[in-house]
Length: 509
Image (cartoon, rainbow, N blue to C red; front, top):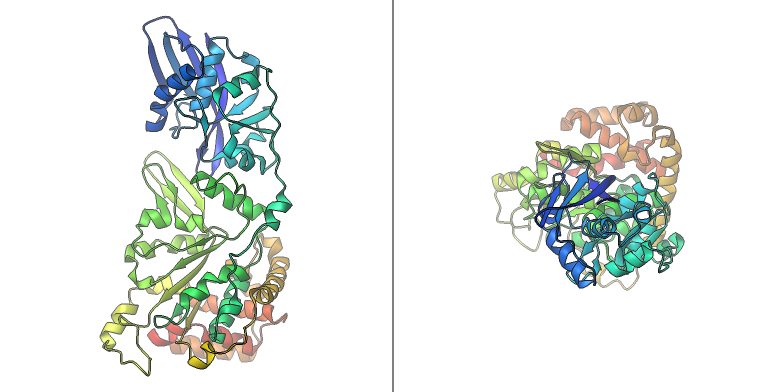
């Protein structure tokens, strides 16, 4: 007695087809799973056996062999429970064989036969659109997520008995449907708004420039100056996610199992705020079975690192590749996975160990050597990859007591979106969408300076000893500032503003 059932598995944030082959032969009772199963897959035999019995079916007391093909790739997770159970019931004649082969089946089984949610349903649903199947059978909690790409009909099930009745044609299940416009219409920013920020006009301007070109930014200021408050509101002025961006972002969250039944699609740009004690694997990704890290969870969104010098140096240095390439490659002896990591970095730090440097009402106890050592925790190559370094001074009482609100996030976002539209049109032939992603050939073409601008940048470069990367960052910043102003060319005032955003170059150069 042999049965075959289709399922799916994950490789990074993409999916591939898995054929679950079930063979029931004469011999002493035995349940063997082959095809490089990991721990959770090996334990499935106990869950499947109990689920079948508690659902009212007879479990065959024979020699059972289950192969997960392709056999050369490791399989992990509990999503093979349901296809294994369906394969056993098909091999014993309780489910029609031709029906089981027409669907991709995934789900974890509880001991009483209920089908529990899984992670990675969205990538499988996207991939299933290219497979010769009639539909996708998923846990009811994952049905909305699987219906997002609208590639194949998705049927949400509650228990093993319902799956059996559906495959045998004894019970009908309506395919799940999701309205994408309604999901985007329900997006909000948790009520946070730039209008709530008092003072800090220069910092707000710098954050607007950073958002307009998706530039990385570092804020330096004493405790209580509003760095965290500003960072939390940056996502409210970023352009809305496109459907393609939302789909890619949701795939990462699906792989991590962070989507609930009501959140079928990530419609807001992610805001990730890891603690400074995070490990390198937690930030970049990794593990024996490589999983995405915080940089990938922040894909198409914002990664906020508060108290930046307090992070371990080796952890910070690992940010170089994703900041430069927009992706992370994790290599192991048996596999190599690449996760997307295109994010906007917002960092915050104190000016010194005590945080009181430059405060008139408080005295800083740090020596120049201590200040230098504190700032040198951030290496030059890392600072080169951060486009804007700005000072965020303590807010004065008159600004705190001012009853008049500042510009709202909606007003600022309108200017940011206008600048992004200019960039998308300009960079569309190169498959780029913002100035921060321009390479050397694009900079030469789109960031030309007049004679006055060339002299200004030459004097600054020689005086501060800027690296080639810092030089390029200034030009890209100038291009973004010109886009905000609606200017086709980079004027001297645009270049001068970009230069003054390189604060740490002036102090440490």
